[in-house]
Image (cartoon, rainbow, N blue to C red; front, top):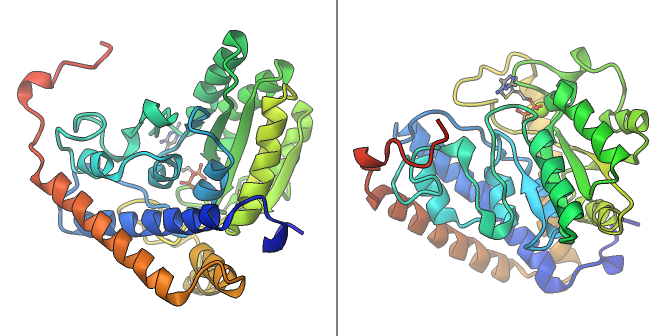
Amino acid sequence: MVNNIQERLYTDQQLKKMLADMLLIRKFEEAVEKLYQEGKIPGTMHLCIGQEATAVGACAALTNEDKITSTHRGHGHSIAKGTEIKPMMAEILGKATGYCKGKGGSMHIADLNVGNLGANAIVAAGLSIGPGAALASKMKNEGYVVLCFFGDGATNEGAFHEALNLASVWDLPVIFFCENNLYGMSGSIKEMINVEHISERAKAYGIPGITINGNDVMEVARFTQEAVDRARNGKGPTLIEAETYRWRGHSRSDARKYRSREEEKEWRKSRDPIASFKEKLLEENVLTEDAFLELEKRIDAEIIGAVKFAEESPEPSLDILETDIYA
Ligand SMILES: Cc1ncc(C[n+]2csc(CCOP(=O)(O)OP(=O)(O)O)c2C)c(N)n1
Ligand SMILES: [Mg+2]
């Protein structure tokens, strides 16, 4: 049983770390949302609040040397892979201390030190970059695997199909991790995809495909671990479809006409990935209410520190305008 905590692969400390990482993602994004409303964020941003378990569960199965590619909705992936929140927040605020020296913003956060190959504004772009990095790992015998995050919408792009085919033919050490949050930018997948499960598409490329509960962090970690083991043992790629839900709109302005308020309420109430995991840890005596309050306090302080760092950091100077660019 995937949900039975007693049969788990992880220690108490690792489980508490998963809860802490999910909480850090949510509180980080709540802070980003507030800063955006205060007019302090140039450009746009996409929030993954409600989807924390996919990022954290998937990254729990990876080592520091393993790599990820991310999406336009990438804050959670970065934090789960170990990217520091101070330079992340600074980048989102367009400050010189950010990961791209303030020139990239929310959708260009990368941190090669922890194997984070970066967020990307182009839907499905990580699906080309990831197998490339996996090919390098295989050719140089470096042993790392690559996990590509992408959305349900990205699976209708040509890049998705090309990536699955080539990765299958070449047995690349890659995990295709689809965060199916039921919607693209402005429409339901029911209008865009004619199979019941996106994971069925794996069959066309001769690789395993599986649909899992993306709001159960342990289920995500368990199934991702299987796919990682497979990839690392030279057996090739897996397609994982993790069902989840984004609580917020697509980006800064979205009237959410494509879904009902009742549906949103239901997901928040009965399928909150953080509340349900917290309950599980309390039931299994891995966590106490006091320890949870302590954890919240620590994370709140960390977020305040990151916002202060970003707000007090300088703007990029004009003389770096033409550095770190290709053309
Ligand atoms: C190639 C490309 N086409 C269209 C867009 C505009 N766009 C940005 S996000 C998005 C929706 C992507 O949906 P999905 O892959 O399900 O990710 P989600 O936003 O649900 O996380 C679209 C169409 C883009 N950025 N890049
Ligand atoms: Mg989607």
